[in-house]
Length: 243
Length: 275
Image 1 (cartoon, each protein chain N blue to C red):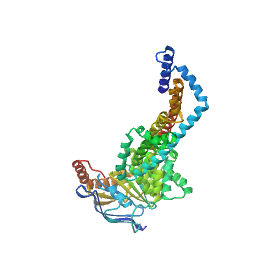
Image 2 (image 1 turned 135 degrees about the horizontal axis):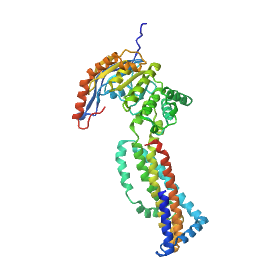
Image 3 (image 1 turned 90 degrees about the vertical axis):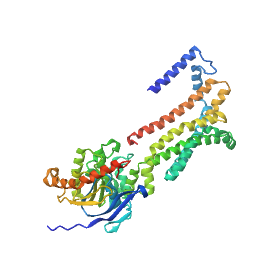
Image 4 (image 1 turned 60 degrees about the vertical axis):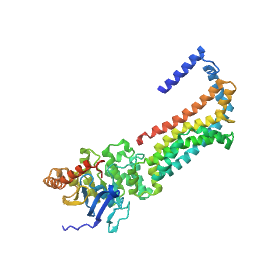
């Protein structure tokens, strides 16, 4: 409810500014113009195409990071030596601002979607892998021993004990990885692309159409909020597990 | 009526075990030998750190003894035997992501019980501990005593001949412990299982056991074996009987110095003592 209140306040202030004209409308367009542009944007076929590009780029980057992140995370967590060796390496690379690799990706993959997929993948991979390691190593050893005494095989252990035990933290990793991934895809599209939401944002700015640009920004914000809400709700639904 | 002596089902000979090596080595057990007969309810009783949980893990096949042998039904014990031995742990060790019923079903799955039989056996075990109404609950929604009932049900549903219980009442309050103990006595009389219980409570040991192995402070040896010949199921009034009082006093006399020794050595160690 506080969140809703904040948004209401924000838009109220913007509307006030629009009416009073405090800021240059080239920098901050009037709210009415943005809303008009937004209505136009969400109904246009052009937007659908841009949305399709951005979402599919994101899906490939995020999906790829989930699969490889969990696989690598599980592999590293499987022995104390591997964890001790590689967890710090992953943690260190995680601190690098990955956008610096984008020009390299542009050289390798060109200006098309591949360069954005690569950047998004890299952004999501590290938090997912690190959280997967934390998840698996954090499974209460007593549960593992109990499973052994009942006769659990290696596969049963992974499926019925380790993965369920690790899943909560892995899910948090997925939530943490979402924004860097989505933002990287958008940033990549803004910097150099031929299509996508970021491309539309960049193009609108270049064409001196700030209202249209803000409309696209709202679309991006809306998508991000939706995903975040979904993941947060999923985490909340698991509260009864209490770990 | 002449009594037929039941066969020895677990035999441990000359068990010694240490944790860590070299200068920091902690001897947990020294030359421990015990034998347990089929259908007996036996207690390993001793002060904190005496190695009783270690001994339980060794006879359960979870921990290989550094020296000495363990035989199970005449065969050398080489490791975990999920079809013959099941455990009830101190901190229940229930899977928090599964419901009460699912916890039992997954244990049955691990043991290799066919899918068709699992639900029924789980339900039966829950009924035996009077937790049927909570089949769909998650462990986080249960009290400590209820969680331990479920842990007991899980051990029972596996239908192993031997049940090993590591301080199952330790995390429970006095009153829950009382009720649990009475229920356990009734249950045991009905099932005829062989049960080894680790405890540091003298009253518990006397109320539940047929025989009590009294252990010394670390490194643990068997100091004495105390018999409690009263038949199961034992009713609450047994606790106030003269026989109970005598046995308890006997245990106290045996253990008092050991407990003192273990507490003092714990105070001397930098990190404190543990099992």
